[in-house]
Image 1 (cartoon, rainbow, N blue to C red):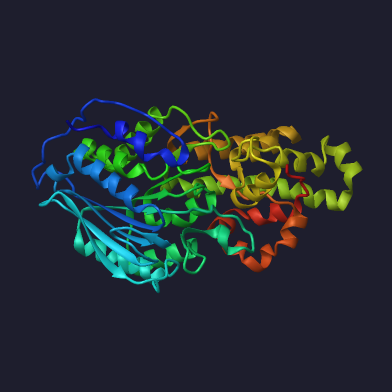
Image 2 (spheres, rainbow, N blue to C red; image 1 turned 135 degrees about the vertical axis):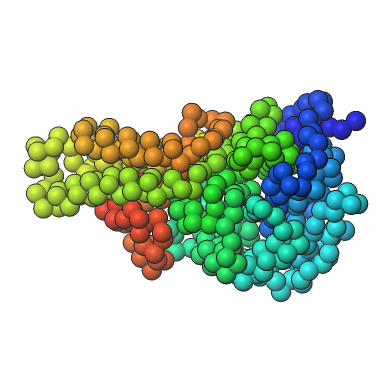
Length: 441
């Protein structure tokens, strides 16, 4: 008897101590007529170790549960760079690269060795070449790109490790957001959805940088929603909704709901969330963030001229109140973490932008700033079209919050933070350079 995705997730999500169950059969729609419905290709691009059997079990789940073999208009192709030292039927243990394609005729996943350990996961042209190969192997009306592997958020630290995805163990390197943009430009591709099966990627920097290349962006601010389990849920959702006008969006929403309805427990020191962004709304959100930054930075500028005492007399607050409000903003960690880990994660994974602007607006108690913060929250809500969380009511987009001394000590100017599309749109670095908040350790 076929088992549902939700039931099989109980074996797939052990990496983060999640279990679930359901014995019901999935509802599989009949194969559509070729001229009636759109075709879809999911491109999987990943790296890591220990994901071989895990990933194959996901594909088996798809083929057994979702009726993929009965629907020739949904294809799955992919590429995986294995971690050095990991040996399996598809990995030689030397950091080599495999490609695969689901074969509808045989109902199997066909693997082939593609490259040796010299392959660089952090080079844009390699991603562009994969996209072109996948497009030729499985042409479709709409394309979904799924990244699987380590994710490091996006923080304007001088340490490039916090700027990328898909760790390449051979070179201790990551595929950076600049490489992603370059690869998409080279391949002249726009995706229906870009899905990050990676930790902590729902930063406003990434959403801004990738918005020109996708209709929707799926990612998590805390950690990956359910480690390496999005793919079977997403594909099942796509098959259940392929006849809908926007099947990809409905599949993403279905996948998130399936994952979170299945959650029984989770690792207490981490929080889980997953969200889908409407990329066309990012410009409006950044515009409101810019308005907010302009107002707040203006207070730092004025206090530098008139002094703290005059500032308090004129406005009833000083920039110290702003600093305190920033430091008390919601950040994506549990208090169960030890102080050293909190500090490391904080530098890499940052704070929630809506929490930050609302806290500052409340601390200043200015109608103008409160109105601006409300507009930021409204714009963020319009961009974030579907979300589920485990530990809080709402999470929007993570954003860097560091004080001016930390900015200087980490060499952010040399790191080129102002070249980010997000900062160009909002001037966020002006706030980072001016504030003197003391963040929790």
